Length: 289
Image 1: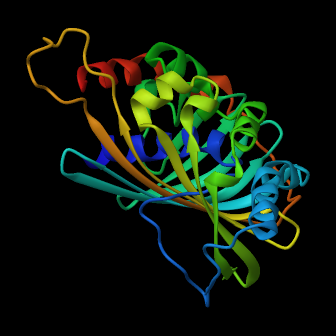
Image 2: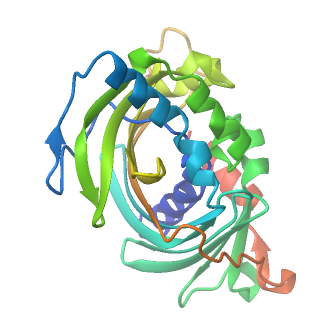
């Protein structure tokens, strides 16, 4: 459980990075108002229009910084087991590359994402062949598993979230401080059928994609929270009348952003130090349903 869970948690952190700059917010599992929040929910008229515009343009305003420092807190729950992980590092907003340190289940993992390939090195443990690094090709994994690629670090796709938002989707919660910075907190529920690959997303996530965002005075993302239940498609071999429910994974992720414009030096490890674990990871995924 520990080793497998650690790997799953860290891989999910990398995959979620593609959905960081969505410019939309959340509906369920809210952490609630923090750091001296003042409520302004239910505003209407011009205030609501202004909030919708702010949320829709958050992606572009944040991306203008080209890079950012980020922290990630994640909790995954499946089949009665819960895995928590925390990460910190830097993210290239244009290319999707990142350098992070992930701590999960008491283990520290050095992680890099370069050209949509995930590299990881766990302290005190070598990969097959005695190599210190493993790699998983995220795009190959997504294609094999039928996962929609907007989760794999493509900023052009994530901008589509903002385009799908209407005034009816946005609720201004109030003003709060995030890491000492004044922000406005918004809650947004997006109709997933309006997004690229929406039909598949609806099958996996349900009819809406719930998230929350906290925007600073420049309209940039300072915090994003996602609380969702991901449903795996039912097995093709399952009998229609078996009554078996699709496997579910509950995921709660909180990301915070600071130090806009920071340097990101993401390089792939030397090829001779890397073991390709893409096929093995996919095989394990199939065996686990």
